[in-house]
Image 1 (tube, rainbow, N blue to C red):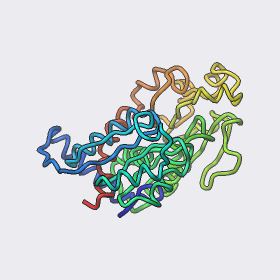
Image 2 (tube, rainbow, N blue to C red):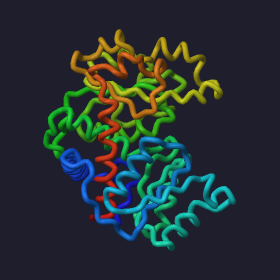
Image 3 (cartoon, rainbow, N blue to C red):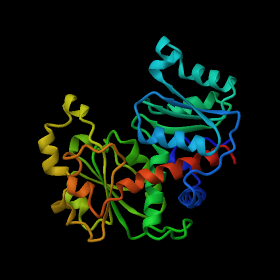
Amino acid sequence: MPHVLTAADLPVSEILNRAESWRTRLQANPTPPIQPRAALIALLFYEPSTRTRAAFEQACVLLGYHPLVITAEASSVAKGESLQDTVRTLCAQGIRAIVMRHPQAGAPQTAAQVATVPILNAGDGAHEHPTQAMLDLYTLWRHYGMPDPTTPWLAGRKVAIVGDIRHSRVARSNLTLLTQAGAEVWLCAPPSLLPDAPLKGATLTHDADAAIKDADVVMALRLQTERMQQGLLPSLNAYRRDYQIHAERLRLAKPECVVMHPGPIQRGVELSDEVADGAQSLILEQVRNGVYVRVATLEYALAE
């Protein structure tokens, strides 16, 4: 019973190939015949989500399962029930797997200790977001012609991730998978939004121009504006000036550089409209690929 708690848990080559198989299948027939199963998969979302939740809901349906969406405010969590008891209850009711998003880092690991079904981490605090990193990797894998995934196929490629690195689960999971594939990863943020300690395999900087210079891939992260209330950012205008990815700044990267963003985008903050919607943007491709990767990951966890 494989859990998917961190990016390191993912069998990368297998998921890439499974995702590509699903992409081919669904592009050939967007409404394939599905044999419904008398079983449910719980989507336990304690934080808001659009892309991740919708993709996992579609993944459940494509595999013939009924997605049972549970939010914190509509569950017994609002009455004081512990996460462990919620998981025990769902398992006792015959759920086949639990996909969970939680504001607390390490919550999926806690759930896995008592679960009798696979736990899939859909984002836990500032810790990890494995399937987002997997879909980002899949997007790059397809962009670069689907090289042998068992090799360091991103060797010689520079990836710059720009945004709130300190609080970003996306950056941490991406760092794991990108470096595993051989990429040179730069993490860039204002000094107050960089981690206190070095992250293995990454170059940390607060200089956006240095991070983006000669990059093959630039990934912007959502700026969590609540950080301004905590005094970690002086103003949005200062962030736009120093860290926004706009056309002029993007010219520092390689001419064939591609732009990514895990969403949701705050236009005019992390990215200018011309970059978000430009020819170098892979953002909508990431969204499409999110379905293929989530169904592939769920299929793997269910050992199907």
